Image (cartoon, rainbow, N blue to C red):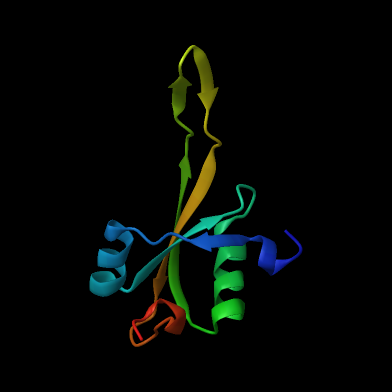
Length: 96
């Protein structure tokens, strides 16, 4: 990966990820499937100006879905759970 802005696609804001953020200071992102943990760590630190303690990645397989007689498949994607150092916060995820 050359460009750090291509590594992180979007934050995942679900009920489970919000609980992780509040209790364990972990943020969940959808990332590029080719990105490794070091690239994800560097991208998060540079873009959001926070210190990262650890990165865990998960390859999520797309589900097979049916619409009438047609079968289709959702895309596979990669999820990264980023643990921030104690005291670090991401201002865009905090309430107003």
